[in-house]
Image (cartoon, rainbow over all chains, first blue to last red; front, side):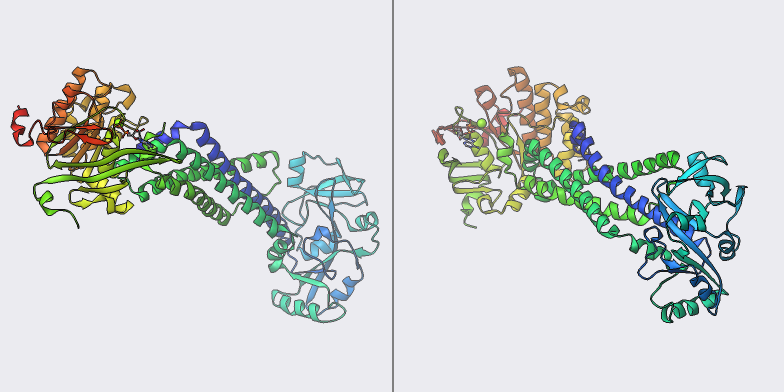
Length: 366
Length: 248
Ligand SMILES: Nc1ncnc2c1ncn2[C@@H]1O[C@H](COP(=O)(O)OP(=O)(O)O)[C@@H](O)[C@H]1O
Ligand SMILES: [Mg+2]
């Protein structure tokens, strides 16, 4: 049984390898995409969380995918928020997506930022910005872009001098003075978000409900730090739909590759199937033989795909240390189930066709 | 069962009754068998002779349950195989029939041992190693077990085909021109072995052959022509009852 199996696998090495690779490719595609989007979201959520803010206050209809919102809130809401019972600190900011660096830029007020974050902004090299066109970057950005103090980067078509490196893991990778970002985006005295720190953990819920239900704050978007991850995932427009499409393509690839492979293999092996039948092999025997082969191809393809995904991730990390790729066990499990499912289903029709074959016709087949 | 019990009681393991077989290829009908009647006794070694195209292979495949007749009845070990469902005919093949094909039909990709083990696996042979080992020794295949079929001679390939056919101790061995492509010396060796198996395990053998020297190893020769059995009476030249004549 095993002997015949390997003889058949080895007889057509190219076809075997091609179908294994096709299955592997469909696995890599899904895992890598999931890993990348997840990593991006998780990393961004984590860095937002690390600011230690309890609540995030944004204009009505905003999403936590900060980069998509413009600065539209008057700066002076800050004072109204500070007057609310239970709020200790408020830090106004602009979150801006910078096309040039393809990353998020924060315009911050260092003082209030440090109040909210409990001095979370740690300069490990150089100093904080003092002049309008100075900026600081985190150590990951520094390493991945080989940056020295005094280098210049372009933000919104203006050159900024890098004067300090801060410890990564908080906020954005590039931070500039709030005032400068307001000027550059033509939003004088406007901000896109307030980070809020409450007097104590106990006050968070109370303040949250107050802001949600009491004018003039009512209608603004308020998010609790605990909800960030969930909200970020759901606020990426079309992510769910795209994931479904991607998975469907992956399943269809595996299904058709296995279907085609097994269909070709059984039409080449009519004699073998005829002999097995003359020996008394039942339909079940023939069907399970074909399904086992398909299962093996799918399984090896899966293993190759999962292994290759991790190699690719390793390689990506090498050339892009700041890239966060988070491949969840859940997704590995999902892809294993889906690939095996589509492989077995792909082999089903060829297996039935093989079992139904007339043994005599098969034996006289030249 | 509508089988004539008298026919079974005299020890007929195969009874073929008024069997016709017409092959339909497209709109063309090819009558291969035109009313065959044949009885094979349990333990008998029967040779079927006849010119090419007279329907010998068709008859063999019918008896082995690989084909169904156009009309007529075939009883194997008491079962009316023309009325069996596909699944039951498969079971019958597995338990009662061993085929030796004209071109041996061994699996070329795997070793002799693997070919035999595959058959053992399919036949769900529970005889343990003993019987298979015995057959391997009897057929002189011990040295060839790890070779692939194409690495051994035609005579040896035939012996492998024989070994495969007898695995699971089927009551009937159906052989289609087994020595057709062998020289007379190799043929003799193999036919000798076939006869020894027939004697030792009391297996019924139906062998098609072109060669009257080969046919001489059988207890009885049946001649076919144009899809019919010829000279029905003269067919029984050698009597099964005188089997002692051929034992040494
Ligand atoms: N599968 C088939 N389809 C159509 N005709 C067949 C088939 N097998 C055999 N025949 C025809 O049936 C007749 C008997 O064939 P066969 O039983 O193989 O004869 P033999 O074995 O005596 O040479 C021949 O005319 C042959 O051409
Ligand atoms: Mg023939």
